[in-house]
Length: 201
Image (tube, rainbow, N blue to C red):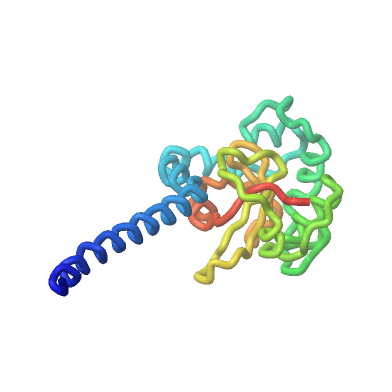
């Protein structure tokens, strides 16, 4: 009787281990699904790099026609005229940490002002706090006005935010160029994108 019990210990442990492994694999696949944008980004990275360089070196847009050229869409696609006129008005505003006006502004300050003026929504002042109030989306599902978040550095903490427009393009207050339209497929941004989605108001 004792021998039978001892002989059964090994297979019982083996089955338990298999169940644990299945659960771990299921969990890992579930997490990966939330970051499908990274797979798509890596897949398309090289093919879009040339177009990206061209689009991020354009001068300040003066009207909706020039904005539509940057975004590579027809002007009729730009339904929210107030949004794009706001971007034209602020385009090139220098970056200033803690700033909140056209003398100088940071990324969360710019997002804050834009959301208040265009969408009449008051959002938190700090990018990581804004990220906590966002309903996560896949990048393929992003709509005009959604938010994109980045983590520059080793901590993994959200420390940069921008507003999605069209065709992977987003507007934000860059530390080097001030308020500008950039592309999520640029390595500088694509490699550090950690979350995106719509604000839950």
